[in-house]
Length: 195
Image (cartoon, rainbow, N blue to C red; front, side):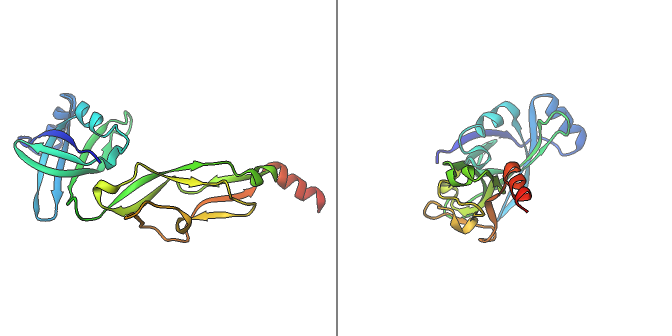
C-alpha cells in the first residue's frame, strides 16, 4: 500500500468558534492520537484530505501526516460530518505502527450469479456490506469478494466461509451471516396456492 503525505497545521487553538472559522476557511479541525503520544490538535486542508482518502483504500489509506515538521504515520479514524451538508467537520487521526495489526472496516462486494436461487424464484439478501478485519496497515484489502455462484435455496454464506487474503483475519463472530436467501414474492405466492 502506498502512503499519502498530508500537511497539517498545529497552530490552531481548540474551541467551537475556532473550529467554525477553520471550516469556513476550507480546513478541517482534527486531533492526532496514539500509544505513547500526547493528543495533538491539528488542522488539515479539506480539499487535500478528500484527495488523500479518495483512492482505492478510502479511509483505510495510510497517511504520512506532516504536522509542522513532526511526522506521524496515521490512519483517519473517527470522522464527524455536518448533519445537513455532509461535509467533514472533524477528523481523528490514529498513529499506527506499520508492523502491528490494526482493525479496519472493509467493503464486501457480491460477485457471481446464484442461478439455482434465481430459478427457484428466491432472492439473495446481503446482510453485511462491510466487515471489520484485523491486519497490518499495509495489508488492508480494498474490498472482499463474496462469491454467490454456489449459493443454494435456503443457503447462507457466513463470515467463516469468506476467503480472506493471507495475514487478514475477521474481527466479528464467524457464524454471522453475510449473505442469506429467502423466498421471493412469486415463490411465496406459489407456496400459499399449494396449501
